Length: 335
Image (cartoon, rainbow, N blue to C red):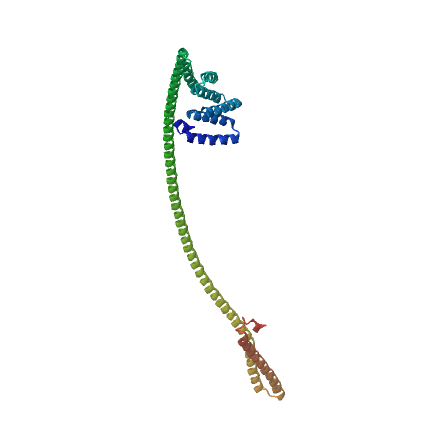
């Protein structure tokens, strides 16, 4: 239909028929009525009034079925103008009168404007110039009214555009401000994060340094403690050696004292019996009878046996000392 308005009727007819076929398949009566009306306009422009009227009547029937009053008024007006183009003035007047009523019912100013102009032409053909003038005046009035309304609408749209433009500028400024604040907030967060990270790094480095220092001190103290322990251990070992040596010396002293004591007894016996034997020898030399000499000799022999016994005892003690002195304290010697 757009191409028809521009004068490209063949292209417009082809496209409009293709669209009409789609709506017929869909069963969309409202758009079917619209496109039949468009086809009526296109055929009228090509002066094919028969085809034009066929499509317009179908459009009127479909519009009546759907109850679309706006389409009804527009289609009635198209039928009236088509009859006018065919010079069928009576039918043109009939349909334009119906158009005027339908348009007034819904205040369709655009349809009324075209209707008034067409009625002015109709009454001109009927030589009723008064009514022709009246309808032309109505056409002029409604056209001016529509122009004023259009101007108001344009002004309102212009004002709305300016308002929206200002609102958009304000919104852009607010968004820009918000973006700048957000950027500043982000930079602040990054800055704080950097400062926090730096402080955290310094704190960690300080803790590591302190821990290293504490560990170093602990190692030094541990080394010192180890040295002290080693020194103490050496001292203990030396003390142990000294104690062992002292114990050995004490054992040796006890052993020596015991040996001396044990040897002293047989030696005392040996000394006593030796002295006694010397005295008995003197008595033997002074004895006058054989019986007396025999008794002294018998006692002397007994003394010598005792000397020999205690001498062997002392020798046995010395041998035992040689066998056991390295094995213990030597206490076995005196058991």
